[in-house]
Image 1 (cartoon, rainbow, N blue to C red):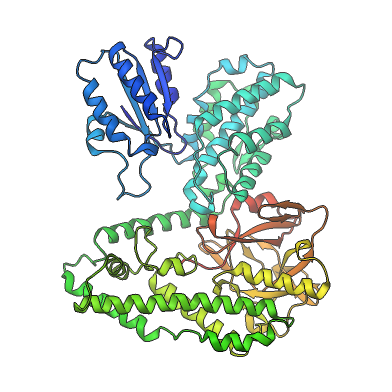
Image 2 (image 1 turned 60 degrees about the vertical axis):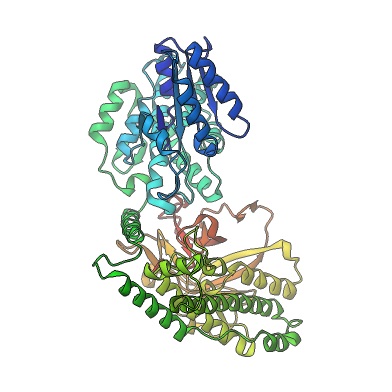
Length: 630
């Protein structure tokens, strides 16, 4: 029997439960569970041979980690199946490959197995009922405080349903994919019962720490995702549970004294509000973004299966013509490389000046842009010769043709031999959009290097390495103020300037940046911006406010990056210095909507604490992005 593993689903308890009903368990040594990994091949083979003769169940988990060994297992099962004991069973579990074109299990093995796929539902109601179904009424009676146990366990099941369902919103939900499963929920319930029995009052802090940092938090590798997980626990695991705490708009925690086990299920079935992002604390735009991304992926996969053709039966000739048109379009607009020798000579006397760190960044950016331009020119030239028959068509050329046919930036496919993606910046844009973006980057560098005069406001998304420019700002400020570089950090203020042309002077103790976008929220303007305030001579205004419907990303005004000394009460972390200020939302800044590995720095955004809390913006998944996907 073959189990297809999905996030949040663990078949082990099902197999163990069925085995106990049949008199087969680990206690009588007739059931063995092996988690496959390096060095587990020999023990697995030995158990299979033993149980084939004597009878017993063996479960081989995570066989996708041992894809090179699985054919040997398949052959072994063919051999031992001849004359095997009637009680012999072999259960195999593996994750599906990350890409549909990849194969990690032999096709013949899959054909010979009974396949079981039980993917966790994506809606909250089904997830909540499924989570509650892991327990029986006996769990309440076994606790010294049955009323508190019911309320806390229902809240824990709600939390499990929410964190499991949030993944459907993509990177805005969780920056990375996490395999929260029922095992986490069951262990947390055991911890909950033990702590309720051992303490006169509910130890909320201890429970939240164990649930958010150890059990569920043990899956989480991203610091901002960990904050989201802990924020949910702050909202759901608190004293308000015993006083009809609102878990979601229109859905309150029932009074445990009035509800038994079955009543909780009926309450969930009858009182659950309609499925929407609001249940997760997210904006309705998150659903639009999720469905838009799913549709785009579906059509891109269809296009990729067709090799990039339009499906009109126009044949190979039209595809080749389209490729030639793309090549001509790029070649005609591709700029010349920067003259690094003359730039270096021009920069040499300025490197020791006050703007020296900025000049270093400019030279580095020009060097990286030259490498990309050179590769684009060379690869298109080679492809042109290949299409004319002057060169043999290499795999890199074939991949370039495929990318052109699909309007995809060459090299984005992880199996592509093209070098464009490796030499470029992180981006989710298609070929035409990213090439236009490249031309804008070249224009900015050309203006910057004309006199090597630092721009009053930099288009930060137009840099290969935005962090280097922010570090340069810190170096310049450190030299001016005499404060050690490792004693300074970044603070952000949103100005009332919405266009870079409005910036007339250099920022004091920092720099201005523009061109960023807010996802999950927008910045207030006009009368809603409140009173303006001054920071080191820069007029700033506004707060975070709710997004407009169907506006998935909203532009941000010119941002004042102020370099400030680190305060003693700030908490040092892997993502920056956390302020823990109720009037400040610590906002992650990413290069693209893919989030995760494209993290750049932490921004500090003002919120109106009289109208909202930091928790609200955290659950909304608010982030600053350097670029859109268009």
